[in-house]
Image (tube, rainbow, N blue to C red; front, side, top):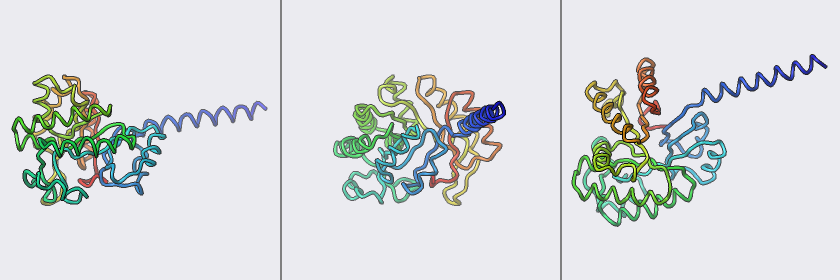
Length: 269
């Protein structure tokens, strides 16, 4: 009897140990814009994930929530891809070709038609699917077309998105974010930023990944400090960082309370 009881105790302790290790091994954050429903298992080891809503069903979102994950839906606010079913509908609002992404166009975010579409069609659909937040891309349109109309257009979109009570993370957009901080309106519009290539860089011609230039890393560190000091959350998205560089990024993020993901490739799959 005592032997059986001892075995049960040992078995339970072992289970607790394995469970604890599993939790420790789980990654905090991942960006998977290049996968679909059929590859949902790739999200198993992540607590927070960014996915392309049009590649997933509501049932999949529910399944991920049952696994206690936070799910962010990708929403391209400042540009328009040729492969989207709605490309022809909005191509007249194009402001020019997106460098390094020839199948994508910068879009006039000051257009009421575009604003209504982003908020009342796409974001509304994603909200109904059960997403916890939105990963808002290409607000860098303000960097390339730095006018009050573009800035105000982005602000109007963000104000409207806030009504869904979704967490809003801006991908990039440092020029826009910095102006929002200067005007002391950032916290009213969004909750955090995701900054790509702080420590790594992408060579689009050779399709290789290298260490970022020192001056670029220095700039982004200073910028992200201002973002953190203002009270916004900070995420980093790096590409194919080496083991030694990953240790440097880990140390930086741990010191500053940031979260980061090391993507294997630009396709984010």
